[in-house]
Length: 83
Image 1 (cartoon, rainbow, N blue to C red):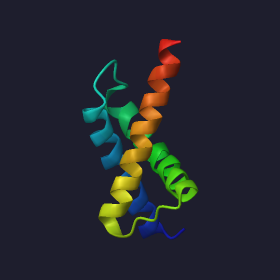
Image 2: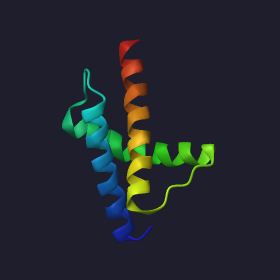
Image 3: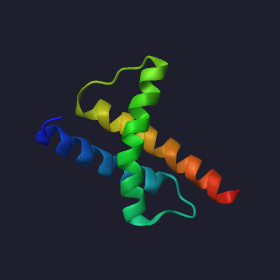
Image 4: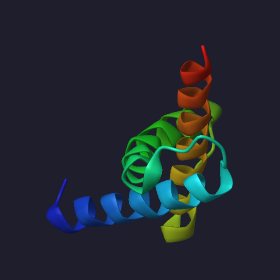
């Protein structure tokens, strides 16, 4: 992965994590935690979309993919935290 691509990937993940943290109110992981979840969630979102056969193109599509992955990851983490 080239450096500019990596920087875009991280920026999109950070934005998605922040958005997911705003949407998924509750116990919260804090700003830094939500940002880290966003970066990991972008990988999860890409995997989930690939498994479902959904393809997202462009910057907006990447942001939506990362956002969905971050929301799913935050939801899973909160379910584990409750147990």
